[in-house]
Length: 216
Image (cartoon, rainbow, N blue to C red; front, side):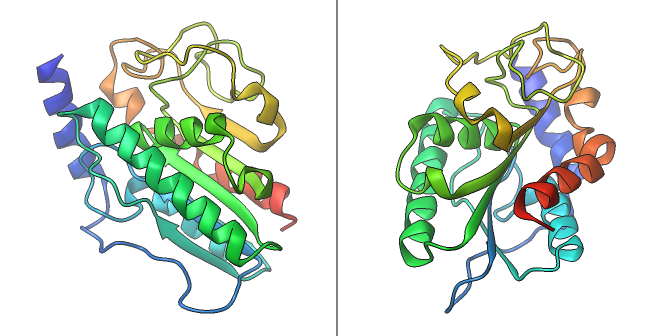
């Protein structure tokens, strides 16, 4: 498992765009759409690999779209603590955005550990969840087999950090979760390559799902 995590760290570093600074929300005013993103494990602060999907939404929408990223360790060591801090920060950002801009439609996205953060934020059902219009999960290690919103090929395999219930099902119309058979983390498989390929494989589909949910 340690070797697997090291390979994951190296592979995500190679796959990601050049290191980015932390993406923050708009300094003033309210956008029509606001995207909050949680990066994958070991990626540099910012949106990480899944930021390409955010950019596709920004470019494809006729509305004003703002974006920010979750500020959390995203480490493989002390994973539980890291993931918990991610949930806390995403929940705080979601609540703050909903409080400041009650008419803004909010989109949540996460990749790998960031997908677990995003799903757990929804399950917590805190302030602002009712304002979430769309959720994108890619390679969620807490994936639960058989849920209706799954878009990949791993519907019969659970993730390695399985959620204890089907708490996301209540939000099924809002969620697209991408997990393919063989993925080492979201489907308890053996392939790291599958885990790293979701933006390339499903990025356009994910962006189209979000655009459909937010009204273009």
